[in-house]
Length: 103
Image 1 (cartoon, rainbow, N blue to C red):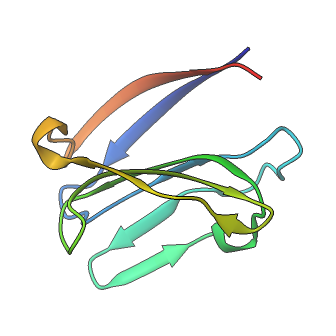
Image 2 (image 1 turned 180 degrees about the vertical axis):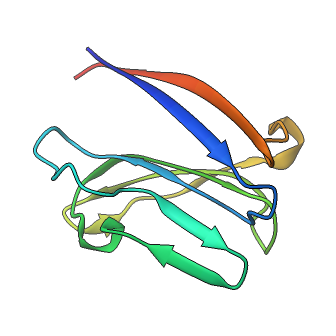
């Protein structure tokens, strides 16, 4: 079993952000995606061929809500969109959450 404790601070100006969890052999380098207004920086994410969990709250655009997805063999899976009505406001806050996964 894997347990991830994730600590997050979301700037109030964010339009979206994401957390990506890869398998143990994934390089331990910068994995976050930051959105600074019109300027977006995606680090390492595009080079990963395996993402076990892509957790991506979005606050603007066509898909508002929580996007959950995975990536296997370099191919994105079928994304699941959870409506924003169940998504707590996280902008301008700091929080932590735990993810548990079994093999």
